[in-house]
Image 1 (cartoon, rainbow, N blue to C red):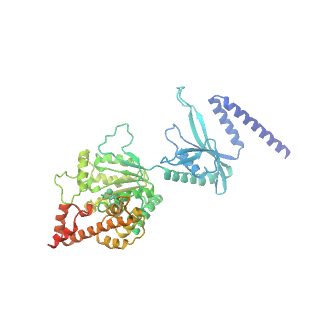
Image 2: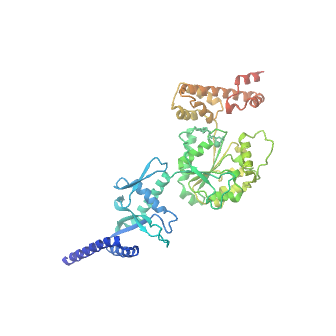
Image 3: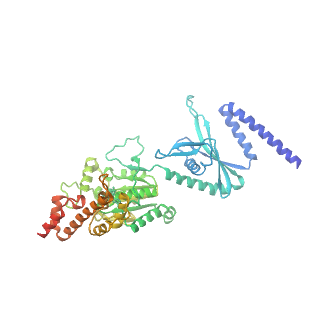
Length: 502
Ligand SMILES: Nc1ncnc2c1ncn2[C@@H]1O[C@H](COP(=O)(O)OP(=O)(O)OP(=O)(O)O)[C@@H](O)[C@H]1O
Ligand SMILES: [Mg+2]
């Protein structure tokens, strides 16, 4: 027994002397010798030590790509252990308004998993560049080192590390700056440019809470979206690409574009706003698709204005048909001006884009089409499986009005609500119009004034509605004379009703 303890003491002091010597030498040795000594010290140490160490290096190989694992560990440690660390690094966060704290170099923190303690150290080494040009500076190689006892090897390498990676990735996703991408019309991509999309930071404030929608419909859409975002395994099991198509249809100003922003904010997805008229042909469409990332929404707005969905491009008719709206004209004009007239994207190209083999790359994507005229679309384009969920957005209901009154005027109830409830059921007024009427126009406008303005607009719209039903011809003539009632509310309804009576 005594011999054993003497042996341990001797070994311990030898090791201590060796470590001391090593620390001194390390400072004065050339880099090659340092590496050599380091290698053998580690071998000797690990022979005696019951601890396991795992390193997570910031850059793998040629410093081209930052390691995902390192970034996940960094996010995990920043969220979970920065309170216990004593030396921290501060950096500006995603919107440059908040500071993000992470462990400083050589700092050490402990973490616990299922009752087992582990240690994390943030570290860096200097390594010379491989270049023979001696004036290149040394490169810093940062890494995190995880240390734990050998007897917990399985627990840590399987369960703990999986937990760190999962949580770290989630934190990174939550904290990342989301982007709004667009394929610029008529833009010629230089060959050195890596991507066909240009982007800005996505900062739309719309949420489902601020959307004027019936509560049940809102709940159903939110549940559908959240179920989709959590169904990776389900999609894999049934052998289907992890994507879902939404068709949003309804009159102008009913919240289709607003809903896309709310969807992106709910799921923390990026948005790819695809301008079809600016896409040269099917090949370019496929290239654009391949460049989109997962956790994104690919949007094609006003799909009926972009393509002739019977399979050919729309003819550039000089005369507009009666049903065409301003948007149709604008869309077509822009297509012409921006070189879109040369676009050869076909319906089959678009169908391939939605559910061809390539559409599966990336995963976790929503494809959203919007239109004012769902009946104009080719059934092949919007059949279930392509556009899985059809959402009709319509005129404002009383429930929708209450959301807007709360948003714009911070009102949950008011004596004028009863009048508005009665009128809003008779009139076809869009949430955009309601919102515009509720918006205070001067600092003097109190909630009562705003609600009264809305009541006037509702009365006009209700009268116009009545006229449309009873005397459609006069209504049409008046619309032509005075412009759309629904759009500007300028039509004098008294005059209209009088004409009808005559
Ligand atoms: N359901 C809604 N809830 C809250 N605000 C709405 C809603 N619908 C419209 N709005 C308001 O009206 C404005 C216009 O709405 P939006 O652009 O979403 O309409 P749209 O249906 O996309 O119209 P279009 O068919 O002309 O593109 C928005 O900026 C928003 O403020
Ligand atoms: Mg829109």
